[in-house]
Length: 387
Image: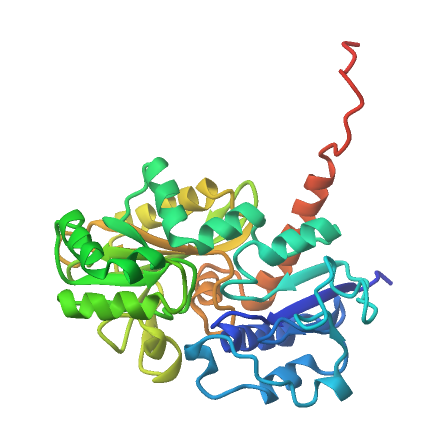
């Protein structure tokens, strides 16, 4: 019999999207075929401790602090971790380069599926760790992950590749805190579309810290709120009568795009409550747009994925001007929500790839990318001979 792959599913993490990660990981682990995979759950607490034995999912779920997802990471104690899950590293003991180097044996794995959203998971940090450890993993590499997480850096890259983005400006937290009036006047001058504006932390997802500002006082409040989550903020002009169109991308060097979908938020825009709490937002799959617009969305999604050197998967989000039909690339998520009812897998289901097959393909792509990377020389033995 063919040996089952030992797949480590990593979830939790230190970002404000900790609880979203748990939901995604539950869905992924539930669909992994036990005849193909031996699933090893690996949890990361809010404070950065790795749980590698027992039932990490139960431990993290039990330690959830109400409001933690919206309020950001906490350092709440893990009530049962000592008895049911081995802790590896941690801030108080000093984190090893490779988790499990001390403090407990890290399991031998064939591939890792890092179902982590937001900073310290989706931003290139764990990807760099896994690169150094030489372990194949699902999803984008270090560069693409970090670019996808940083809304400012990715927008500059998209502009350089001729991709359409909404007019935007970057503000550093330090500048705003020291000279708020100068910053606000500068934004009003630099964004000719005026109010309303959208203010976002540059490095966060799930719409955490995003606010709409309809005037100067709201802009000040929105900047102060976003600055609680990041040192770098992005401010964008609002798209008139905006429609949110999303497209899933799958592949390595030859990526493909799904049919586009549309998000119809329950609130004025697709904020955290509309995404996860009130249950009144809904998805239109496929998006009710013209065939030529759908083709354009798919083309731009693949171009954006290629521009950041993506691998494995990404969900590419667009804003469409509801008046003119103009498309703007909003952002690229390298580890989008992955529950069975999340947009990324639902779009592939509508495109002919069911959830279980999608997870299989992502594992295959991870192994393919790792094999290709192994072809690259890591030593230099002098000039190659001509013959």
